[in-house]
Length: 412
Image (tube, rainbow, N blue to C red):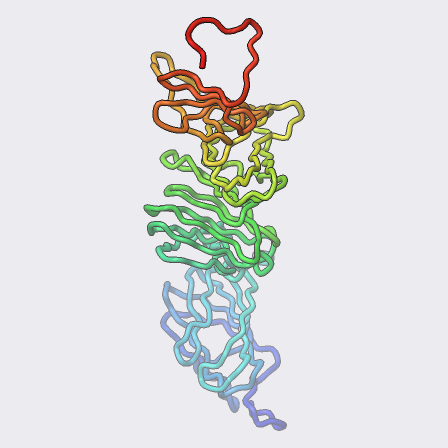
């Protein structure tokens, strides 16, 4: 009986359905049952294999001696796992006890060939776990298990789709990393990130996308989080702040009008406002209890910077240019956190200027006292000097009105 096709001349198997049971006691190489040769270790379309010990190999015949589509269903009926290899020694698959796998030739340019694999799994309904594992999944025996392999970073890095479910660990000093476009990752991509280094690392987004409502996210040493893509932006879950580096800084450019801080921006304890003002600026903070150190480093050009919670009836804070304040928000009001401690003997002020007195009023920041030079302090009203006190006395700018007259001394 011939096993060559009379139409194509290609080698085919002797029947459409064939079966053979093999006891695998040693590494065994199979051959195609050509020209009626059914002696020896021939390959059948259905092979039930019982390996008598572990680490044994069953090798398929040369792929280029048969046609594309030649196949075999191999079932492990024994207690030991064995390996199926191609004719050149490459591993096609391994089959554990109770599993069945279907293989077929998809290309045969050489003896090794290219083999397709379909996992039938174990028994009548179980799937092959190893054939299903992907990013973040690990096959252990016949089950799928969560997996987050670790990988260290020490230089600038750009995340990509292959970082899904990985735990990236920063080991360097001060550094940067970049998140790709959220649209390229889709809604559900995530990665784990931990700063185990010696300096802060800043994660930046692309295409003006946001992470936790901001363009960047800073991780101080020992800080970590899950970074999750929504398909259009990124959020962190479980962001843990280090007990050793509890303060973050925000530098906020402003020019004029109203600004509303995002929760991420407002979470920064230290805040600096910069820019050249063209009109009054009002910055609204989330109405939450928090502590802030705020510095106004703008060029005011005669305009003001006001801090508010936006809650009707709440107290606001006006911060003069060039000055720094420490404030407490109770969720409604901004309150001055500068106090004199028990036992203190003095409190110091900045010198201030005639337009921004060192001690002024929240509703009128250009009225108050300031120190223009050695040995004097002056009083400013609406940005104009009205009086100066020195070791020699009082100097009044302009005229004065005295309801009860003036007595004593000489007048000039």
